[in-house]
Length: 175
Image 1: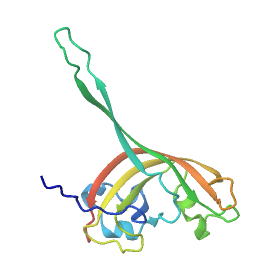
Image 2 (image 1 turned 60 degrees about the horizontal axis):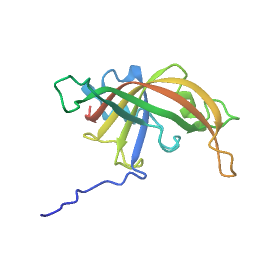
Image 3 (image 1 turned 135 degrees about the vertical axis):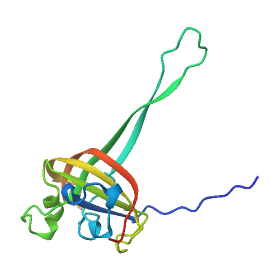
Image 4 (image 1 turned 90 degrees about the horizontal axis):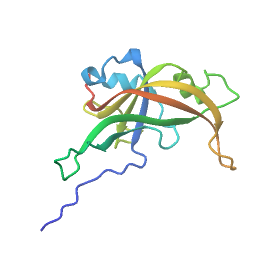
């Protein structure tokens, strides 16, 4: 038997994240364009590792009937969640400072699309046919703190986000 190892893509350093106001893109699956991302806020270098959407599906056992000798498993509710987003900011500057651009883009109570290009370096230009994942999120409170308590830690904001909708593998169009 021949075993074939599929080609893979390294994940380290190959994710680009954008924040797009909800009003700017009504339905990414129908009409996401290169311009939607080139004109959006690029959040990649503000975000600390992790903190993007993951999903899980419940699995359970159906009630066993008297005539059954095997348990029936069923799939249940899908829960899409986003762990708290943690990003850098400059505490002694206002929102017009470039160091606080992410803080300004992530207003409390607003809804934004968090768009991801996976397997592509942040320095690579957005192009037609790039596959993207889009997550409509409602943003919570901006909790100011630090990444830790060591000498190399930085000031950061940790912000909860509730996923309202996720659309995967959207190919960008040129126009």
